[in-house]
Every structure is written in C-alpha cells, then in structure tokens.
Image 1: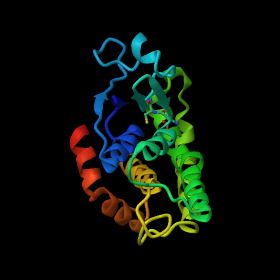
Image 2 (image 1 turned 45 degrees about the horizontal axis):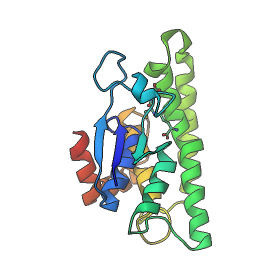
Image 3 (image 1 turned 90 degrees about the horizontal axis):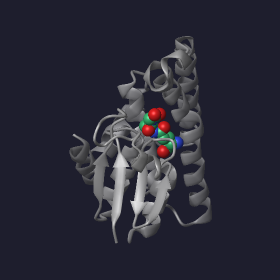
Length: 205
Ligand SMILES: N[C@@H](CCC(=O)N[C@@H](CS)C(=O)NCC(=O)O)C(=O)O
C-alpha cells in the first residue's frame, strides 16, 4: 500500500500529518509551495488534478485521492489498527459536534484573517473585516468552553482525533496573533507534547 500526504508546514494539513504519526502508518510527505513556478507547486497541473483548488491537504492512498483535513483524519482512523474516534453513539456524536464546530465556527475567523491578509488575490482583500474576525473567534472560543473539557481530552476520557483538530486550530490562532485564553494554550501545549505530535513537528521543521 502506498500512502502519501501533500501538505504545507503547520497549516490544516498538519492535522493529517499528526494523525498519520498517531496511527503509526508508513507514509511519504510532500511539502508543497503556492508559487506557480516552484518545483513542488500546489498550482502545477499534476497537483491540480488531485486537488482542483490547489490547496492542502491531499491524501493519496494508492489510486484513491481525498481532500479536506477532517475527512482525511477520519479516513486515517478507518485504515488504522488503533481507534482514534469514539465508537459509542453518544461519544461519537460528541466527536462530530466538536469537530463540526471547529471547522464551521472556530477556524473560519482564522481563515478569514488569512484570506484577507495574504491568501486572496490582492484586489479581493477587505482588511476592514479583520476586527470582525477577532470578534467572531472570541465568540466561538467562549461557546466552545461550554462543550469541551480542556483539563483532559475534549471528547470522553481518551485522546481522539478531535484533540488534533482543536490543538492545531489553537496553535494556528496563536501564529495569527489572536487572543487565546490561557487554558486553551495549556491544553495545546499538552497535546503538542505527545510523541506523535513531536514527530509530525520534526517532519515540517
Ligand atoms: N477545508 C479545507 C481547507 C483547505 C485550505 O484552505 N488549505 C489552505 C492551507 S490551511 C490552503 O491550501 N491555502 C492555499 C490557498 O488558499 O490558495 C481543509 O480543511 O482541508
């Protein structure tokens, strides 16, 4: 079996890299760049045939191609010998709740910030939106306080891939200089101290 992840540093692809390390699967990793003329360009015809938006992450498992970080980590769980997603209905529903909240509420203000600072074509950027993104992130952080336990793991009593989703998103917020309550940073530090996280960090260093 051949497994390859295309990513970029600690962007959302890092969730998948970390999940692959947790699962202990053999894989290759390609760090992509967003410059059209570079060798590993996410805008090359070859890469665009795998990921039509020229974004990361993309996972290639033999001839099966998958995009979207959450779908990829869930797939990694399904091909792994260890289980990183709860199987009991209520805990599984909480996993879906937390991960859905992260991709639809918590990370969107971060991506709004990134899009309007550097990712969109310059003529599409509206920098006036940046304070609104900060407001929305703070609101999402407060709402999340009500559904997760930051002293342990966010769903149930064991580490799950929801912890990867949350810890990476908090780290992303820190890199983008958003205000983050200290308990979230302490939680992120604890998750990033896991062996698999350290291994993933060494790959993108
Ligand atoms: N919803 C997608 C988002 C993918 C995405 O936007 N990735 C960013 C990096 S975090 C990217 O490739 N940006 C390049 C661009 O927008 O051109 C996921 O979670 O995988």
